[in-house]
Image 1 (cartoon, helix red, strand yellow):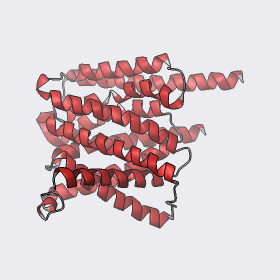
Image 2: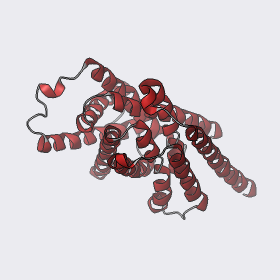
Image 3: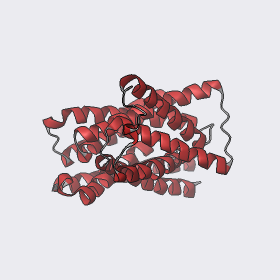
Image 4: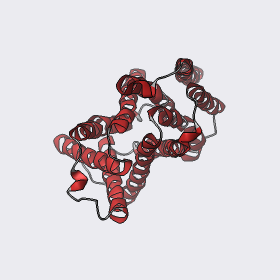
Length: 301
């Protein structure tokens, strides 16, 4: 059991690294956030459907469960719309810095979802991580729209994590991923039909630069289909708060990648390294503290 948790924890770090690359892809892709999310969710749904057929996973669900998946699908769609919108309005660094607040939102929301008391050190760790990332980046007022979009995206990320923490108890992760992505893509489709009836699904809508198609392909397959299924699966072994706290490494991974790929536009200051060390220390401290409490409880039992 302990070995499974360690594997899940390391696996989730790989997923978070991939998510960090997602932000870089969002900056590289030239189309705006709405069609980007539509392509991402639609293609990812197809990839997962093929995987389901190969693996023989049942798609049977009750009407009540389908409604729950629909709500989660809408949440993840809006999360991605605001996430990529924030990147377009600001840059990768600022967007990922604001996404760190997801741990704080989770600490506030998890007691509501799971009906447990607030643990003081979760709030403290969440606040420390947020503070560390504010030290890393000097957030400029010129990016206020991007900051607000990213903060809302972080909140939705916390909500989505908590919802799936419930679903994973009774449903296969691939099934969850397929329905949420499919329904999310349908929600974005509905928006495009209403808001952009003249351009949506026209020939011009699908005329993209070659590299955009390459980046979207990577985004939909590796960064979405694979990462989405894998992330939901590891929730069997990790608490929602530990997941969200680990996600706080996404800015570290993402900004390193952005600096490599995008160059001076994402250049980091020395504060980044200070903040990164603080984040790593908090992640380690969280794991040590939780494991020590469990070990103590087992020992006393």
